Length: 274
Image: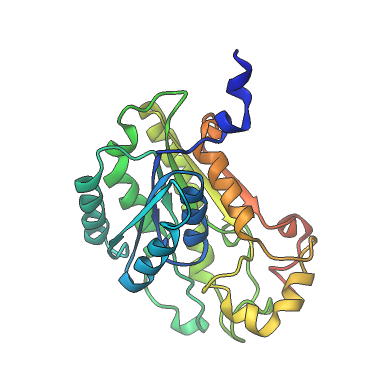
């Protein structure tokens, strides 16, 4: 084995590699897109809001050797996922990474939880539609990668008293959907392994985003102090996981989920109480 193959540059290199990130116009998606372009990769971000996508791409394209572009679309239906994938196929014939990041929180009173399925449907249909591009030229040393952004909410209950949402608003359907996303990642990993595609889930705790904006505004200090590390997740934290799972360093990782919450889940704090 050549020593150069164990260098940081070799293990974590993503230069000229193509990533698709749904929900890339804000929050975790924008953070990961920033990291991808900053390290020389090409990213295609997708969401419903063209203005936000355009602004993010303009900013990312000032970073250096990487490139950012966008596709406007809605992943809340199969037809929407197909339309996004069709546009991507017009631009590239190979992608290295699909980050299924689009999601919504359904904080609502118990009797009024809306009927939606975006957090699971979009993961499945985007993966199905882009499997041929992920499998092209893939190998067991350089597989295609599917990364599903789930949540610690898929691993534990989220109490109505955590401060993350308005009083009386629970996350019943959100928790269930994120648990389903973790289960789906395991099943997809088994199905897509023979095509040389890995599938993993990332389960973030509290990160600054539109989804956590209410809690950040009304209970930021209490939320942070309820975590063992005394802080929220940062762009470096989520981006480091992306670069690991999407590079040579993570090529033999599949059917796993990684929790990034500073130890809160293990400590039993931050999600069931303040």
